[in-house]
Length: 415
Image 1 (cartoon, rainbow, N blue to C red):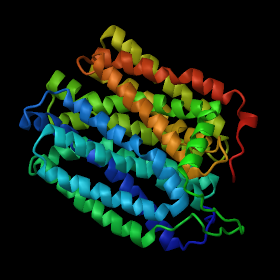
Image 2 (cartoon, one colour):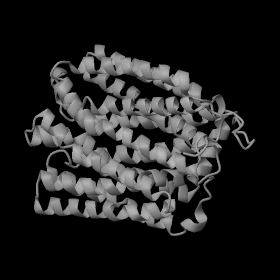
Image 3 (cartoon, one colour):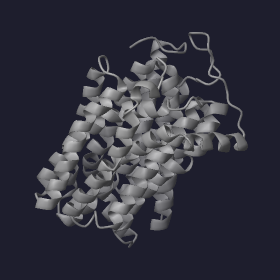
């Protein structure tokens, strides 16, 4: 790893990366750890099973709804202060789920908990880009992706095991306590990047907080077609994976009659494949440009989704469907972090605001797409899921091909 862009000691660098990774992991664990118990939640509240994917989509919506404000706020008041506030609010919302008494209150808390994702995307990711140079930032983004993927990889299985001794309420309480510990780690180790002089003498200046200016800056981003294409492509690329996370309890536990533990085991090949893709990305970064990495990742990405369509047409069952998703996931792991970096530097505006818009567009695409797949029967049969998820993921191709065709002159990301 090269020197950091700002002056920060090696111990603080390690602590910062660990605390950031832990917070991101918790924001995903708050969703995935409870997924095996979602049918029990709806049964306890005497609610319809449609609340299983609905609660997941509300969590994603929570990740979107504040990002537009969090990015500019962190550009003005600093990344550190905003991330500490976000981590504290997340801890409180998780602890509050312990005492909820209705499905409506449960869903409202899911929305608030999901806002933690907004703080991760709009505040912590720009801080990472401002602390580390391009190659290290991309590697760390991929590493953070690997750590975050431990949640859907281990979350359902760990949740199934913990539910043998704990209730779902106690799981949320444990998440709240863990978030408090992460808050302490962030308080001790997270550096401020806004208003700080870097090693080359430049300064990431604070941006005045003005709603009028914020509106104008967002409108300027919305008028940037390359930025819009990259951000929307990010969401559509991840749509099959997100739809699988939200609908797998219905497909596997309710539809196929699997136990929660077996359901958790079936997640392992898919999310291991994303980690493999990220490791491949890390090896290829030295010799390939970011655009070339995205092009390479599209091969397993497309082959996996085409195989998924074949599974739907031929009714090949769970094993073939999971294998196809795993192949797709390798391609996603190779290309996702590289595309995020290119999207972030489509604009010269402050990275807090740009990252917020990237997150809003991509997560909105995932949430809306997942809701549509659920509404048209993606949670009723494995074949329906495979078909609609694959078609949704392939919708990113026109955007990506258009985005990459002029890649040689499109971006000048700082080293």
